[in-house]
Image (cartoon, rainbow, N blue to C red; front, side):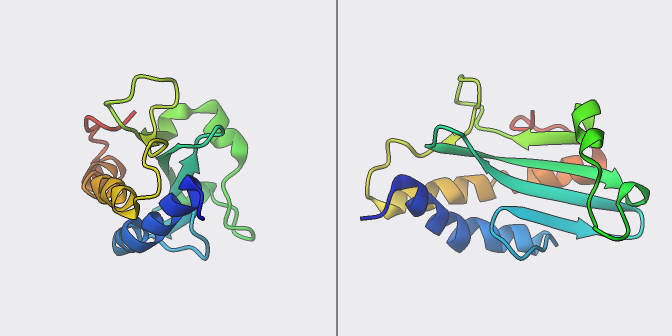
Length: 141
């Protein structure tokens, strides 16, 4: 029997990842993505809560000149010193510290995980608006 985390991962791969890729993000894994042009680099990651049962999307935009030409990475200190460079897509209905999209009570019904993944897809325009124009939607924190 699959764990809730495995079931959520299945729905994310099936429903959310194709939409993230449609926004132009690439990456070889299932948690960290990047898109780039000559002016900037955008990063997006799916982060699960340490204790399980929920996840968020974290994203950022940095000038292309900040990216190491050899590794393709941005120095960690950039994100640690300026949290305005990164934002999170959160569930505004959650009032706990992490404020993630919760699947902890879904049990073994895959359709519930699929519905949650689809609800996050519906919020992706807020991510795109912040990355492109700095517009902070209601689920951006």
